Image (cartoon, rainbow, N blue to C red; front, side, top):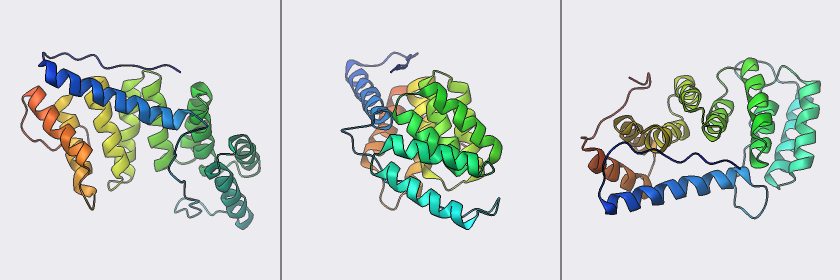
Length: 223
């Protein structure tokens, strides 16, 4: 499994440097939760069978829910086979591609994940799950510009999608050194939460102090 650590282009105090390293370690651990197939606590994936883009066959909805159950129960090989079967039976649907991409990511098969997610994006360019997951895969591969495009596309497709704001904030902060943008997207993420995330609040304070910037809200267009 390959990790890309941040290149920091500003001078920081030893205290801030320790906090930055701790944040980078936290991000790496979060990535490990996605990439590993056992011994980790993973968020439960919901079987969303609604679509505003295409009509979903009744049997496809049944098959999809069964495949999601396999994935949520960590039966990755069975879930992989189920989603591959769905892609053959219902090639017009983006959902099976999205979840197969998640499975490949958890297995550390980043090339397969990238190929699968790109194929899925051709079925539905506005699929939020595909765009967020593809951003993660690009980030893992060191393709930071493509990761940025993916997260911005997710925000454009669904402006209230908090995960995309957090993901692009992390990308700008840890991987691209674009601290003002990172601070802005972290703040937008916080504004979407019912209860502000204390960890992210700390990141905002830290990044503003480190980079000598004032609180700044970034735009969806990445300006």
